[in-house]
Length: 289
Image 1 (cartoon, rainbow, N blue to C red):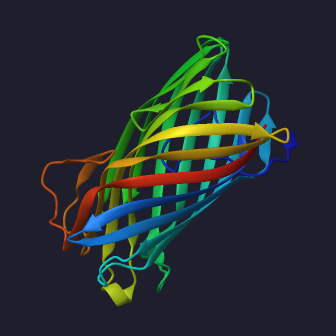
Image 2 (image 1 turned 90 degrees about the vertical axis):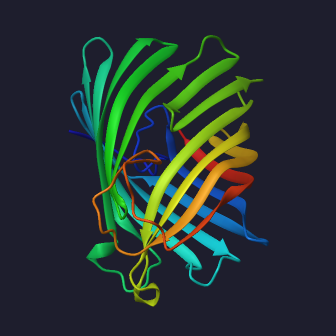
């Protein structure tokens, strides 16, 4: 058995990004949203770390710890002022002949306003991805993830792509969750566009009658990535929320299903909803292989 010490990796809670080789990543994001005639903002802080990797033959097991904090500024009093998430992710990768691999992943953690935390504040997700390295410049993968959200059951099908036709262009990420197209001016400087979709939920404490809050968001960014000091990378992005919704619900009374952020069939009506578009900006720093 070989044990290789590493520190945190940037991986989404539901999908796998094997092309990401970050050991630690910290990101700050700010988004604007309007409700009635009031301007509000959502400020989000993410910190993600990779834990030591265990390798035995062609099998690799690794883990990551993630922390997220959302500050809801100038929202109605019925909404919480902040939300937090602390989660652990486990990954098992089995490699096969012919440059093929299968990844099985799982995630669990507390997603709430951190008031009166109990077993009801836990969420979990599981999934699998099959990946093929066609050439040094092209690899593709197909995967499906299932998440048990507070609003019901969520399915996330995705196609994983890492394609670099030449030294100047690259297309990476998961479709339709988070694709990214970059132009590389040099080995250090790159710029491009990125789309991202997120559907998540948080349990609220007794102050809010044990309700839960659902967040849906689709964002488009123009990005700038700059590599410095060896393996450190600065990430800057500006763009817009093409769609963002914040909904308050009482405890789910039906077993609903959602594909990414699209509900299937009838769904419980929210007690309150804020919906709109707005400006979105992001700054982050990461350290990778």
